[in-house]
Image (cartoon, rainbow, N blue to C red; front, side, top):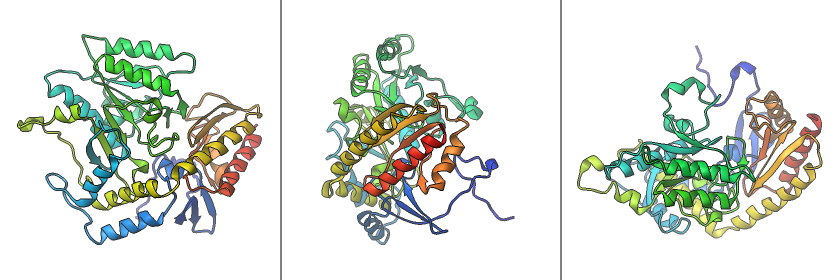
Length: 419
């Protein structure tokens, strides 16, 4: 029997068409049947400078001909050393310990293990992780455990560990979140190890937005109670929220920061968990039992590191921030246009991300109109993948005005169609 592909987050029982993409350039995907599709979600939030950017492609080609892979446990190589050095231009000085992995989920798993090891190696038994309602941090077991419980992970509930959950800071009700966090942090019988958040905007949880001031206050509460603060910037990092990292807008520095997706410009998998000196020092010892026991076969793959270095060079050499600001302005104008429609609600924007609900404000991932929305956009050669009835745009920064206009036009057609 011929092997068949099992696609992620795809219910094959619905018989949905699965297009075949044969090449890509910039913000455009080209299919085997001659279609040109605008990639309006950066191929699942990873592409920043566009597909097949010449500088990244060249870096990958050169590196693959020189050193393709080497064990990273007790060994090193120039692309990784260069990347760690180059990141110092983009990260706060205190996040100066760089641990490599290969995806957003593993970057989060690393952060959790760092936080638990931090306390364990100091003789303190802190096991509880605090999370925010509606959050999503990945699909590995630890990452699922700290994400929202529901349809995503019902089948695996027996594998997940318990966490302490604080309410999402709804506008005008942020104090409820602060109070809940303070209660958890002040618990002397079961002191938490860390709070992990998606800064400023929750991704798969429905593109829910909160303010930099709220982020700053949550970090302050954690600092006051000696609880580690972890920022999951896997999606929010590398310009999505308008700054390189979302935490910059709150003027805060987490104890641990996770990044992936746009780290290589979205071209090849690579992830980093950046830790502060106290977190690193808690694992630094002549006692081998205090070693940080985590790795994967492709940790700090030289080809991926070369791609990441090329990405950082693009940030230095090209007007990336201006491109981001142009998208922000265009989104703002479009938000004003669709606000007039009665079946649109919850319009919000965070940097280059624009989101809203169609028909109702539930934001339910299993909304019945979700598959219909997906099909509607595909028929108009637009790659948008709504989260149920939540429609969002998250384009690569190279997207042209004409391509953005096509995306906006398809969205307006959709709003009218589903009225």
